[in-house]
Image 1 (spheres, rainbow, N blue to C red):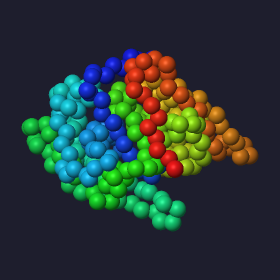
Image 2 (image 1 turned 90 degrees about the vertical axis):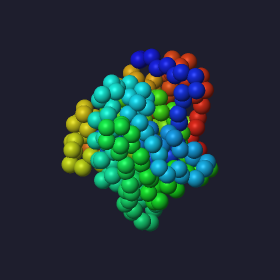
Image 3 (image 1 turned 30 degrees about the horizontal axis):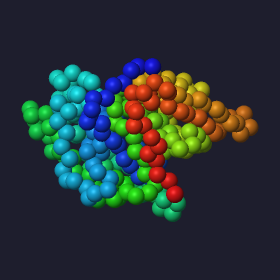
Length: 244
């Protein structure tokens, strides 16, 4: 496993409502990184700050990428994130809304300002139950957005170390569309690489079991736990999921 170190005072947490963790959306790696960097600046107990600023320097340091690449990545991710949306389902209504309603990028200055929409704010602030928290550093080295999504989905169930989901729902959560329709391709291109990257870079050990309906695999069960080395690197690591 790749060693992860955290400097004193450098820890940043990402906190989301469980409903947002279970929402369907699709982002590129840098869009996901930008979004999580912004969320890590939010205190989930307080009102939403507007705007939230992220600099190329912060982006570079947080994700371990060269500063010159961070400028371009930040600029492109800012522009693209404005067009991205989220799909939620509360049991009665399917809702669709955007992450942000305004973005400002200081061209040449390497700074982005994000303004989260009023629709997404209830999923990020004033949270006192049914939310999930994890340290941003744990996903900082991941290079696949599928790995990040799987990590978040699993963290929601950290108290049990067990997550079961149908193949159809899993595909929907990751918004895979027509890609990897055959389970063999889904496992080879999405699930197996994500599990391997989580083990190597996030210290999360994941085992996958499957169930069949007829001849087809229709259900996935992920059993997971933190690697012992990760517990040493993160001495304050505790169960930060909040469920009723």
